[in-house]
Amino acid sequence: MDMTAVLTAAEIAEGMARVLSIVVGTSIVIATGLAAVRTVVVPRAEPVWLSSIVFVTLRRVFDRLARESRSYEDRDRIMSRYAPIALICLPITWSILVVFGFTLIFWGAVAEDSWRTSFYLSGASFTTLGSFSQEDVAAESLSFVEAGIGLGLVALLISYLPSIYGAFQRRELAVTMLETRAGNPPSAVELLERHATLERLDVVGDLWPKWEEWFADVEETHTSQGALAFFRSPEPGRSWVTASGAVLDAASLQLAVIDEPRDPQAALCVRAGFLCLRRIATFYGIPHPIDPSPDDPISITRREFDLVCTRLVAAGVPMKPDRDQAWQDFAGWRVNYDRVLVDLAGLTMAPWAMWSSDRAERYRVSASWRGKRRRR
Image 1 (spheres, rainbow, N blue to C red):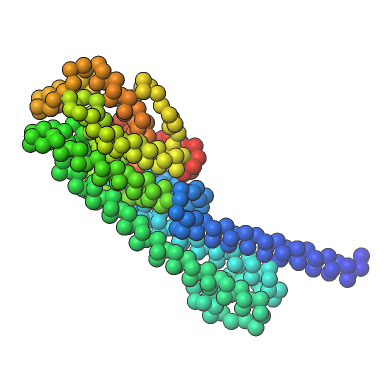
Image 2 (cartoon, one colour):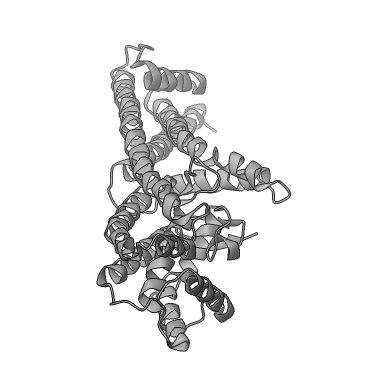
C-alpha cells in the first residue's frame, strides 16, 4: 500500500475527529449556557435538565445522611444544608461543563494543541480572561469568547442569589408572623380557638387578603426558582408547607362550620392557595387531580373533623347546626388542596403539623423535577 495514501487516511481520520470534537464541545457549551439562562433569567416555570440532575442527585445523598433513625432535629439540621449546597453546585457544574466543552473546541480548532494544552488553555481562558496567550488567531478568539462566558456565569450567579434570598425572606416573614396566631407547629383549629378566646373572631378575615398575596408570590418564586421550596425555615418547627396547610384549613373551616355570614375573601384565599400548591407540585412532577370532585376522598377522617368541631365549640366559636352538611362543605374545600399539600410536605420533609405533614411520607424523592416520582 502506498505510504502517502496511509498518511492521507490518517490525516482524514484526525480531521474528522477534530471536527466532531468542535461539534460536541460547542453543543456542550450552548446547552450549558441555555441551562444557566433558563435557571436564572427566564421568569417562568421551565424544566431545566441540568438543574434537575444536580438537585436530585444531591437530594438522594442527603436522604441517606438524614436517615429515619435520626431525630427530627438532626434530620432538619442536615437538610437545611441541602438547598444551599445544591445551589452552589449549580455554577460549579456550569463551569466544569464550559471548561470541558472549550477543551474539546480548542483541541479541534488548533492543530498544534495536545489535550493537555487544550485543557490548560480552556481553564486559563475561563478563569483569567485569556492569560494563556498563543499566536493562533482562532485560539485567541476562542479564549476571549470563553472568558466572556465565564464572566457572564459569574454575573448570573451574583444576580441570582439576592433574588432567591429576597423571596425567601418575604416567605418566612409571613410564616413567622403566623406563629403568633396559629402556634408552632401551625394549626388551623388553634388559630380559630385563639381568636375566639380573645373575642376577636371577626378579625380572622383580615388574614385572607394577605395570604392570598402570599400564595401568589410563593407560586411565582417557587416555580421560577425551584431551589426555594427546599430552603428550610430558621426554626425547625416552621415550614412554608405546614403554614400553607394551616391557613387553608382555617379558611375552609370558617367557610364550612362557623355560623357567620359567608366571607368571599376566605374562598378567594383557598382558591389562591390550591392553585399555588398545584402549580408547584406540577413543577416537581407530583401527580394530582386537576379538577377533583367535591365528594372525592380526603386524608382527613370524619372523626378527626368532629374532634376539631368539639374543640371549637368549647372555645366558644359559633357553629352551624347541621354537622353533616358542614363536613361535606369542608371536604369539598379541602379536596382541592389535600393531595398536593400532603405530598409537598413529604417532598420537603416538613416538620410535624396537624392535617398536613402528620400524614405525609417522610421521604419522597423525585426522579426529576418534571418526571415520575420514586418513593422510598
